[in-house]
Length: 97
Image 1: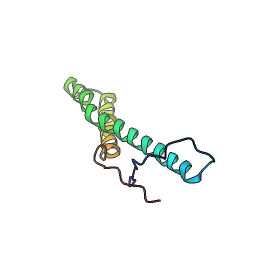
Image 2: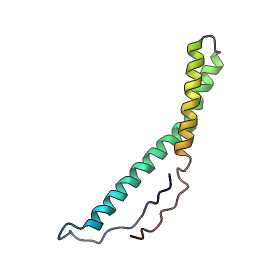
Image 3: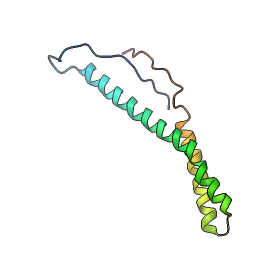
Image 4: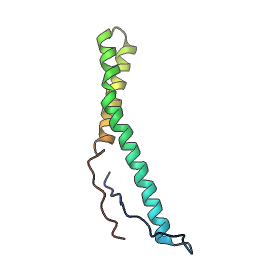
């Protein structure tokens, strides 16, 4: 997902006039918050999703519906791993703009 989230803080005090760079910084912070949240949810989903998958497999696959459930759970687990694979591995980088 190639992104960098900055941990810079804005200057103290109320802004005296609208500033484009401050607005853009807030947009980047919001975007970083959203990306981090999605990655966290995906990561923990990938960690916990094998539990119901093993439960279905332990009960046996007797119908095509059960086979479909297992297939969907496995695909969802792969997708969650793909989306959440970078969770917790990135360090904030300074914003150069």
